Image 1: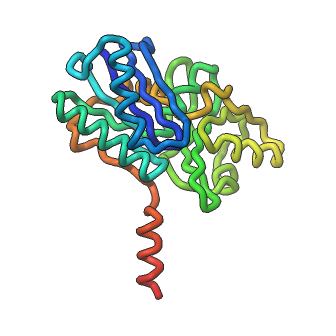
Image 2: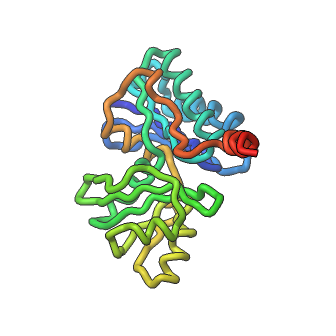
Length: 229
C-alpha cells in the first residue's frame, strides 16, 4: 500500500510517501514561509521525484491536530482536495500519535508527545511503546506542564517528542524526573510519523477527516470574553 502523508500542524511542513513499511521519499521545510505557499509545491515535487502520480497512490493521510489552527486547516484542506480529485480514501490521524510513532523504535518506554500550545500549556498525549506496538495511555488534551506530570501515575523515564519537548524536559529536570529528548532528526513532527500512524487506522470517507483543535481558537475565546462583559 502506497501512502502520501502530510504534516502541517506546526511551523514546519513535511510530506512523505511510504510503501508498506518502507519510507520511499520525504521532504521537510522549516523556512518561515506559510504552508499555503509551500505545501502543494512540496507534494508535487516529491511525487515528480519518484515518478508517481496521485492516481497511483492507495491512500492519503494527514495530521488533523492538535496544533496550529491555520496549519491544520491548510493540511486537511489540501489532503481533502487531493483525495476528492483522485477519488482516494483519506485517513486523518492525531498529530501527537504520529509523533509518538517516531519514538516507538527506541525500545520500551513512556513516550510523551508534546506541542507548544502557548498560554502556559502543551498539547499532549502519553503512549507506551512495546516492541513495534504503540499503546495510547491518554486522550489528546491541552494541559499545563505542571498538571501533566502531577496527575500521571508514571515516574518516568520519559521519551520526549515534539516541539514542546524542550519545555517538558526543563520542567522534568527541575523535578529530578528522568527524561530524554529524541534526537534532532526525530523530535520534530514529520509526515513519516503521519504515514506510520495511518497504517494503524482504517481509511475512511473524505468528509470524516476533519480538524481536531482540542481547544477554542483565539477568535472564539475573544468572542466569548466579549459576550461575558
